Image (spheres, helix red, strand yellow):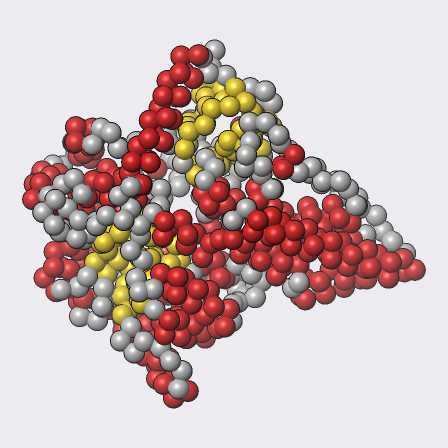
Length: 581
């Protein structure tokens, strides 16, 4: 009898059927012993040799990526190389070996554990997911200290679905793409490097599937349904037949939908709808562009702030410029730093808040630490000389915050003028609407903003007072709550009345079930991940604005969330049974 696991996070969508290979990777055993003064120089040399060997391995992985035409994910391993070349890390390890008279494996592992423990306490999913990168580097250095032969994912030579506690970026890069059908890990999140690599490599994947290694053994037949978030262990012949047909149908549908990539994104009555991509980091540029995005509606800049030190102006400028040039002449909207001082562990290591969701985060942090803010603004403004750039401030809740942010930006512009530095003097400056106060005073904000972008993920959370990752109340988190719909209608109305362009960059923008609703409410710009971009475009090209407006009016007249949800589902099944997956 089959067993179904229905939990976890879809990292890369798709359906695969095949036999499981349970992979535990390189088991790291850390020897711990004290050394004598006379052994110090030998031990330090052993450490430095292991660092050199680890660098060489990572360079070889980068070459393999290049040979496989996956240059867009090379930046991940550039970050690993930077960590290995960080003089602070090298010097810290040398000093601890000398001071504590411990062997190199012991010291390196302790340093890694300290950093992992710091990240574990941080209330930010994206930063917590960098733990696997630290683990990856740690395992490689310790393995090279012990000169052990490594287990390689490239050795897999028959069709397999990989089941693992976790996969490091380097393990993922070495996957034999000819035979690895999909992978499932017990840990990880959708913004981990491993998840991003899975999407770039077009390998279906689910992560965060708790205790999956306890339920699956090597040789088990599996169905990985990374569409609905389901794993079927030892399915029946009937289930295999059903999912085989379903998989083939999805491939056929996706191939058909892909044909509309170059077609206009407009409704039957010729109203143009702009589709933009949400960018986590530059390595996703190719896949976003290949899906027909008309630029970047949300470029999250947080990935630049993950290293031990704050990124300097030049580092930020080069990353922004890369994306801006790639998408030129289409717009790239760069969001300024969107997390708080509690997330910049080395900068604010003694800074903690009881409730970081309501604390010094996003624009509040930037306005308190204007040196960091000004450095980022200089880099963004300089990148605007290379294409179409917009600046977006996150989590604006008061007019004073917006006026102060604009004042600092204009002061930085005057500074660049005095230095003769080129930038777009007409650059647009807008805000993310993520909190109820911004909705209520949107007409006031419109007087000082070039555009609005709605971050529905946080807006729903703050409006309904629901922590969407708290399983005890997560069922209350629903974008179809009538309060949310009324807020979305209010913002669209203010946008129309004031002539302020507005887009949606939260998750509902990329969910096909909300497309008709959003068009009916008045939204003409949607920014999303690539997962459902084809489906959203297909819906846009199949409807008129009039029918979407009728549909949204029907929903706004309702009161109960379950009634609204049922009406949306029935409409989708009736009108788009072939593409809503």
